[in-house]
Image 1: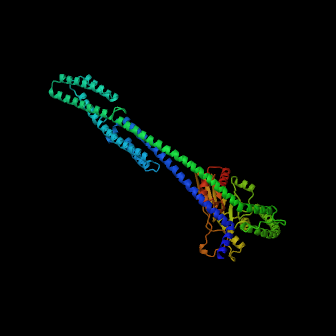
Image 2: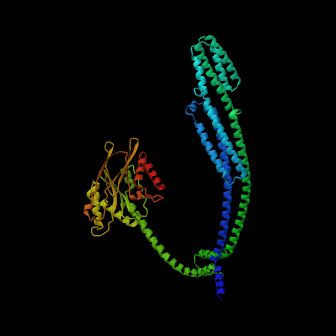
Image 3: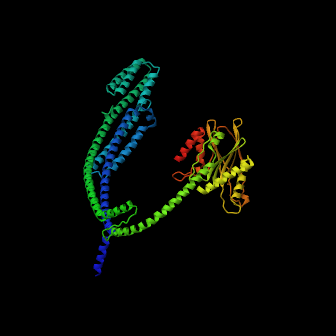
Length: 618
């Protein structure tokens, strides 16, 4: 009985979609891992073949580079006196490094999994050829050093002896000596043995001439020793030239060429064999990859069919029912019949039918509440628009600003319909009062504070005609605390202000008196051709709020500036400086100072456009 019950439980569990999907997913996961492993293995084999071909290409390149460096040595370095002075040359050093890299590459290639035994034998022979080649080349270099050039080696000995003979004041036929030198140069240039014979014949004639024209035995001996030293050095030099090789077809140079040709032939054989193997493996990889793709497609189609049968069709039926409900906006008496499946989708369908009935009942109630909310929202927005118009009305008129300020711009972009920021203008005789004010709070609370601040500023100036900005801020502080009863209540509402008094210019200078409550004044000008910008900080105290600890009380201070006409003043709230970029990094004072410094040469119109553009981009 217990066995039968366990079987029934297992069958019921397997009827669930989650069990079926889990089984299919496990099967699909196993197959996918197998396919991925196959593809990775195939790609690995393909990469190994490509790496082997890359090694061969690099080896070919290094062999050609060694051949080029060898040519450079025989063409240039052997006639370079620095080579004989320093006993080495950059060409030989570079060749040594290239050869080291070449040997290392051959060893790496030999250890590669793509290399067959017969190719290993060829690579071993290639390494032996390189060793013979290097040994022979080093012997050639040593012989070249012994042969010398100009004042070095055998050629130096030869030249020294003949020059000493030539510059002596003893009698001999100078034409014979010049003929001797010409045969020497002909041999050096043409590398033909006939000139060695001619040189020896001319030397015999010169010997006879020395004996004839110099009866003094000591002089004869001295001159003949010089001539013999010359002949011995020349004869040894000619033998070395022959051993080294007059060109690439003789001597050691010919042997080097033959070895290089053999190396290239062996390398070409390996290259051909590796490419043939790579092509064969590439074909196998293509067949395996194609088979893998076909198998993957078959498995995907099979899984898709099974999932569609178990999940997609019932879900589509349920989805169409949901769409119909949405199209009818949950209205009407809608009811649906679903197949009585025992899986999750069958249960979900039944739950949906129950939910639909409940939602339709709730929807009618929500529609009624929404209608009431819409009416109230309309009233609120209407009030906000009126408040916005009122706040706009208290701001200075642009015609008035145009008349008194001439060159200015205002960037006023409230976050909400109404704002706690405003700007203020007042004229007392020839003095112009300008303020930028940031009130506590945003939206409606800030707007109320801005109305209070604007009203109090106009009241103070209308009653007192004050021309001291710091004193004006002190009176404004008292008025705000009195109006809000802050000495009796705990609220600390208030405002931050930057306030400037501008006086008429005199002799190209304008007097500016600034006082600030937690706000700064910025200005920019041109010092010759150099733009300059600076911040004048206000007092670290705001307007409003009851100060309990009088020891921390700070009086507002005036900052008087004499600035040349053409200087730009900037007054702003922290709304601009607190703007953030995508990384939530604030715009900040440093960036603003640099911006206005760069804009100092521009007109006021261009500055407004560029600042707006820069802020938008930031």
